[in-house]
Picture 1: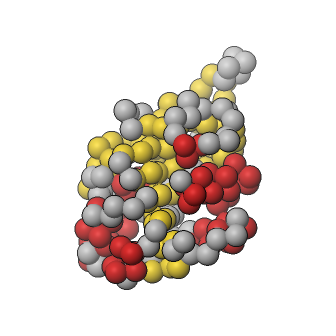
Picture 2: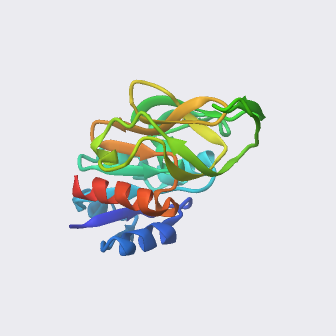
Picture 3: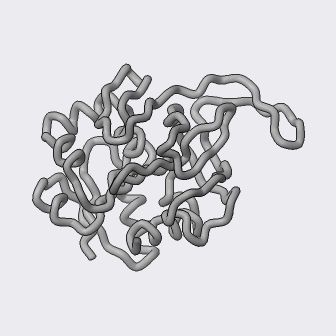
Length: 204
């Protein structure tokens, strides 16, 4: 199986490569259009700022390459946000593949299930649980499993949501439209749960 990891200026690429190695897979890091198109699976990772990432993709015409992919594609963190229509981060027009807007978390407080008041700090950094799992991407994953997050922005809940998370507001922890999947959390840093999600994507 050939796995292309899209190379651009906003990647957590080394962590993704290590995660693939842990599950016995190998990926190639590339910005070559032909290699990306010919890959069996494509991973679109990302850590960074939406505006500069989109500028880089447009300059190299990678935005059109990504939009026209027909094989399974997995966006991770910023990669998921860039699959959406628009991000509040520097008023950025994104790829428009998943018709959902990306908004910024607002600092404040939230009340937990037990009634405790917990502060909302931006960015969200650390472990949180996912629920309402609705895709084969989460085969073998239990409801309320914990995943690792580092993000200030989130995709709004919509008909394309396949997993939810709550951080002061309920949001899309994962989305799916056609052959495109996106996860807001870092699969490569989410221990056994993240590794199983990667396996499900690659074996699906």
